[in-house]
Length: 161
Length: 161
Image 1 (cartoon, each protein chain N blue to C red):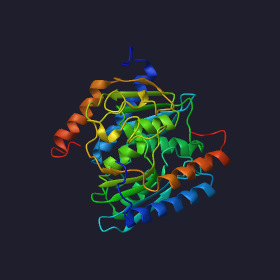
Image 2 (cartoon, rainbow over the protein chains, first blue to last red):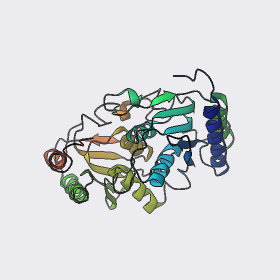
Image 3 (spheres, helix red, strand yellow):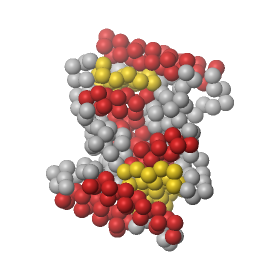
Image 4 (cartoon, rainbow over the protein chains, first blue to last red):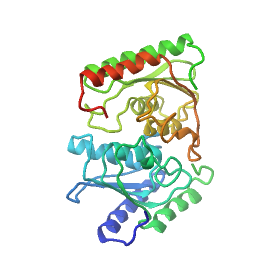
């Protein structure tokens, strides 16, 4: 669902994700930022896309943040935690978010071309999805979308994928 | 599609994946094995599930093999490579296989509960999937399925997920 109102902590965390997205862009990585909070609201992981620098097609911001949070807590599931990310997760990340038992997913821009939550496979709506997080999309949507549009216009005009 | 015939190298590689699955089982991990061959047919990555020992919900056999192969070649895409795995990949792994530009996916057992190729999201059939590998399923199907059935019956009777 779209965010009905912009609560302070939601916007605060999404602004932190935008700062991480900016860091990614300076490294030539797709500007997507992500963070995870524990059930007490403490930030336990921060990441951005690193597919190019790490030579790793799975190094999306969400995957890196999930691995970081699980390593930090020495668990394979993050029940009660929330994940914030500037772009609607793809199917790979949506499935990983489900496997990690994330309580609530907050995302910024919608992604009709590659999204896996509100588009394409709509993973959380599938019978093969066994943990469905709450989902709130559209947080700081304009700012999140602009980061990506700007990046592909100026840095990688021939490579929008 | 189901495998029309059992070519020697397909079966040989799937038997290697079954040996990796057996290694996983001895460690208390879900017995799923995976390997990747380069365009010349050389094996460049071998892995099995490690979600428990690595405290990592993304540590499926396929994800680990893709990361290993990309690290080995220092690339983020594996054009012309083939991936063999004992179980139909989930949505997370199917998307990762697509992102890595795997040429052909060979899998063993079908997975109606959690598969993302022939079940549920059917990722490769979505408009948000931008690289579709060839897919051949059902290789050594009985042996692959039996490994998993046996594991869940004897090792983790209360935890089939």
